Amino acid sequence: MSSISSFENPLSFFQDFFPKGFDDKFGKFFKRPTEECTELHHPLGVELVYNPEYMIECNEDEDYVVCELVFYCADGNIKKGYRKSVLPVELTNFLQPELKNSLNLTNKALLQKDSIESQKILIDTLLSIMVLIIENDVPSISLKKYIPLCQSLLVEYIQKVEQNHPSLISKEKTSYSKYLTPKNPTENHFLKMKTSQFNRLPVLLDALKTEGFVEKNLPLETFQKAFDGSIIETPLGIKWIKIYYSRYYYGSALELIQQLEKKKYIPEFSYKQLSNIFVQGDGTPITEEGWKEVKYRKGKAKKGRNDILEDIEAMVKSF
Image 1 (tube, rainbow, N blue to C red):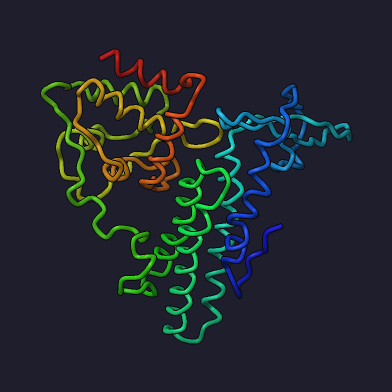
Image 2 (cartoon, rainbow, N blue to C red):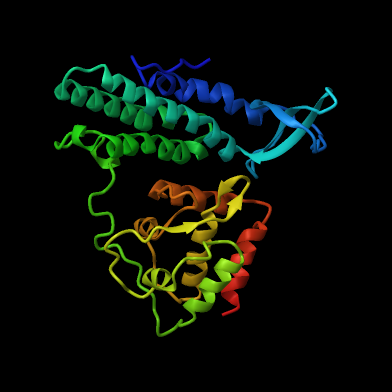
């Protein structure tokens, strides 16, 4: 079992979890025999227990797991049911509360310090420890395909600490400098649209709104800036709100760009450009590692493309 973080060491959980704790909890998923199961939902049920430890079926190629749930029903009986989910979602849902806890503990630890200088030393120490976890411990997990996802989640800790305590961040070059939020994230990273070959952005935006990919109040002017050769002075923050397996599915935003590129409507794109255009539906930034992860997973799918990606492809083909 992994250690519990405390304000004496806000990162002790992650120091212990990678790689051994990860392999104990998640690596064994793909080593158990597959069992048949039937999905069951009780309409009056309230979920009492839901934990990846209850996994009873798995498929490594498709990255899904079927987890056992326990329902307490209105009649007083306890019933079992099953819910299908994908392992990246289970991993994210498991780690994010721990990250939030570590951030809260970091704040408490700072309050114990009696000077700005001692607070700076603490922040420098914690961020340096997190870099070691990201660069040394995470790459040792047994399921190599999830390394980028884990690293991108842990980078969020560094950037949240920076956001919460900017005056405590070292101005000197450090091991964590490269993980800080870029000071000029959009400089020289604009996405230029070949407008002479594609002039139906208003129609495309309407289709994306109708199908629930972007917010209905997204201004056309903002959307056009992503494709008209503008230099984006500040990130556009276009929220990609499509949900897939209980998670904002920005892999479909990547699919949109790839389909537009395939049609030669736009030139080659970069992950930095995409990060300056799109954010997740709740406003969370999408890191370059996040784009790489969804591209990798799309390429590894062995049973065809899902309906959401097919919808995007059909949408672009209609122009």
